[in-house]
Length: 390
Ligand SMILES: *Cc1c(COP(=O)(O)O)cnc(C)c1O
Image (cartoon, rainbow, N blue to C red; front, side, top):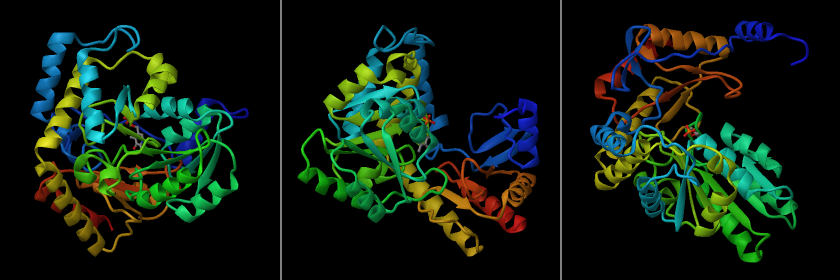
């Protein structure tokens, strides 16, 4: 930051169209029709893919738990912060993800910046997709392991890079669904590569596969996530990270893995050890989401219908949507200034779909997320606004 003051730095961001603002919603339970600066907008920017963040069942589970356990948890899990609801949620989650065990973290961000440094240490080598989420990048930095970045979704490149690194413990880390592009990691191929290499290696020089399933959980594989999507069974060397904060409509992160890996995290993951546990009301809402998802697939069906319809119509309008194959649909409309203008034009039509700019992504874009809670009219209004803004 050489000799510039904070106010000069902020001025420079403003000049480059890169200054960010917080836009808080007004009152209203629904995350589709939201009030921003006093005006109702149709929201196409939430990750609440199934509309569960305002679901009555989740809310009443949370209320009931709050009555019974209070609003705060008072301490970390290793002291007295956990409740029987925390343990129940972890058991349910392990079943849901097909693993021996699971551990709750206070957010997905915390899970990545805590679990990655526990699993990968100095002397280990991490192979990371170039578009991995910021929390993975931060987790890698904290780990002091050597990090090698492979080209986005390029398994050939990954394989070449792995072969050059001999004799160390290796960890491959990838998002399942890339949060700004909406494309899916080629996990069948990555899994097969790791499987093959593990068959030749002896621990501790084996390969771990760490999957950030933040946008896959509740969306892919009938809700169970990306491994189910590719019909892959979890292995002792796969680690599934995820969040309750997106499709599951609640809050908090998690890791699902073997009992040994979870035991190791309980003993070494700093964001788990040194942070107050999530309140029980939050874990109760997460558990209600898991129950609902396993009982009823109508929300997933609605999500997939909405996504297909919107995606086809956006394509028909001639927009560049990169490699999107999920409810995350990027629309590339030009440089940062053009993207901001486009987003403003949508705002004028009361459509809320913000511009995503550097440094979040190299290529500026409008990022649209469609959910099961949008109805046909919401989607029609978005399409009208898109063809008008074009
Ligand atoms: C959102 C996200 C996270 C962080 O999860 P939170 O629960 O919101 O902290 C981590 N990884 C990816 C890929 C994400 O999209």
